[in-house]
Length: 177
Image (cartoon, rainbow, N blue to C red):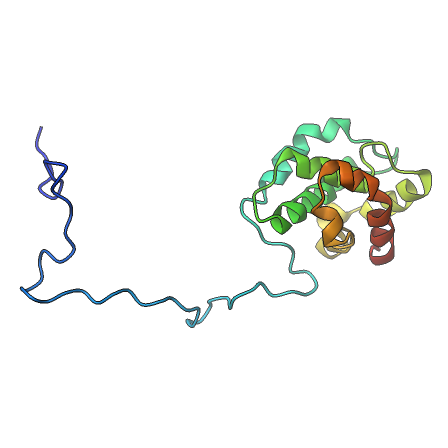
């Protein structure tokens, strides 16, 4: 079988960047990179309404939520699809705050804070049913709910988030629709 002429036949033959340059000519050292081209985002992520929480592979949270959607405790008149959307967005936000892709624990924390694990009292469940209604197709309404819980509650471990769920629910009620 023929071998590509640019593939070394022995391990000690490494590719040489300067092999085609004239003798005595060397490549300059690499310069540091700066975000100075049009379209580059400056250091830090812009903050404000409707900007979301960017993170790596956050869309995976939708798949994780769909795996547990049948176990979500929703009110009789609360659309499950809207509950799935809000739960996934909250899990995405938690994962992004931690700087990683979503994992099942993010979904568990989101379900707990939203009360879809069955821990919500009747007044919060009634508010949630109204707030979440049509949120699957209404991005601004979904963002208001998802941006409600404080960052420090979202970044807690599951057991600690359960203990502070009341605080997160109160914040959602203040900021949500």
